[in-house]
Image 1 (cartoon, rainbow, N blue to C red):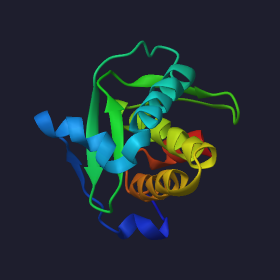
Image 2: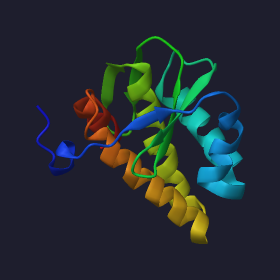
Image 3: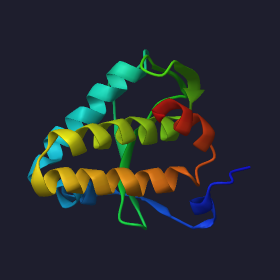
Length: 142
């Protein structure tokens, strides 16, 4: 059971299909979209020992947020900084690595770009509170 106050708010995720994918990252992150995308891939390589690249699904959230998730089987996620070691679904892996990437980018990028990444972190974190693997996602990022 999830007792977080935001858990009772409905935030829908919508898979971004086909040709719309090309505009999704620029729409959310502007000229820094490639930097943010590369950060997501870098955190996946760092946190998921079996990750070797592949296709990622894009999702837009009804609260304005965005995340991407790899097409892969559930996998082990290891966070050296906090000792987390657990198996997550591909969707939860995507949420986790995006939270790491958005947080990092919010501190590295200046001005509006950093603020945009901070907003995306907040929106995705809010969505994560409603996810079936919230306790694992939270343990991984905290």
